[in-house]
Length: 167
Image (cartoon, rainbow, N blue to C red; front, side, top):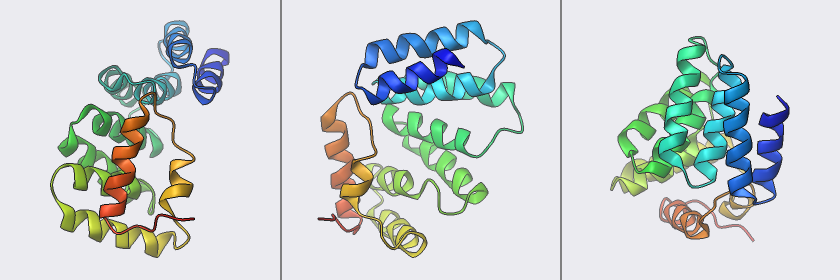
């Protein structure tokens, strides 16, 4: 747990290579821990290593077949950042089915990035009905990306989906 926690702290500090190294160490020390694998997936995806993140998410789900819903969020995040939009959409739909209101931002982005603006707009409408105070600016302030242009692309997708930019 110490390496999992330190990987998340390092990620928040923008120390991406160190965060990935700590996440890797957490999984090495606890190869049977589904949580270590799922959080490693989150770290790797945010650190710009989405293909590696997919491997860790899938491992987490195999280790814990009755996994919590946020594992689907981590998996969908990794798929979306890797450009596997159909898999991301499926993961985010499953996440939202298990945890209503969750995964809708990423689902809207995935729909937009996969060329389905109508479904992105429908998802944005659902998101605002669940979270009426949502703004792109507030959401963006909670996101961590090694490549800042990735976040700019995501913000553009959310704007095109009809979500409010914020102040």
